[in-house]
Length: 93
Image (tube, one colour):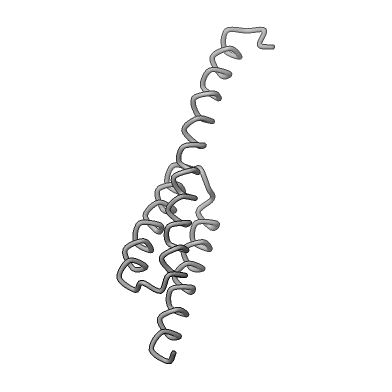
């Protein structure tokens, strides 16, 4: 329980920040899920579009401080790697 006015204000700010972070994280997960669904469906055009949106969501989350920039870089690299791997498999199959 907050004892001072500044502690009460910090609690209010923490509630707002938590809500913002949860919203950004949820949007991020949704975009990555859409990318993975497009990837597993084998739709190249949709995969490329969803990859762009997922990378954008990850970069935005990193710029807002929701995730660390190294984590953002790692996630983007893994998505790009998965997309490239699928592109290599598609012509051969």
